[in-house]
Length: 252
Image 1 (cartoon, rainbow, N blue to C red):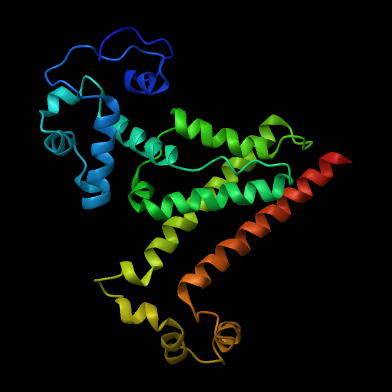
Image 2 (cartoon, rainbow, N blue to C red; image 1 turned 180 degrees about the vertical axis):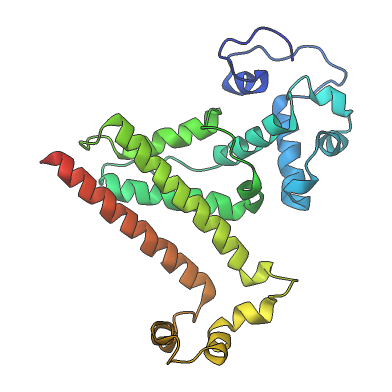
């Protein structure tokens, strides 16, 4: 893609924002940025993120890798736009309501978590800078709207969102790796994950690990999927408690 940039962003990002004219000529009719990005998402969903390359995406589209460079300047750009496409599928219409900042931010976090769980490959996309693509900014806007009316400074509002999304992304990555259905090989197999409490009881003693045995005695891992959701909700609530203390201190 040629032409002087108006924003300093890659041309493909400007095209996604609609501030750059779409290519009108090319070696293959019907090719577009949207089709290139969607093909990348398809490859990632079906074969994993490691399989995504310009040549692999071009093969899906029935064209050459060189033809893709009219729309995306590099694989890194493609990955960023693939992530943006996932966020574009998120229903944001019910996030920011008039029922308070806490309820809104909780919905925002659960919505983000659901997007990650539906597209686990997203968690492997390297983060190389702040969000600048249209759907990521739209999602950011929804989070900030939840804080409208609070006494937080603009910088504090951004910090709240950064803290919340960092927690959600980290939790999504960890829980996906702990999911028994995703553990198929290696030193720790499905049977170990499924029988984790009993394994710990065999390996440890109450004398050496009294705090751990107190927890194990309460059978906290009865339903793995339900437990993961409960644990996410617990951590999310504690973050909200902390944000609430900050907001209350600013209101004094």
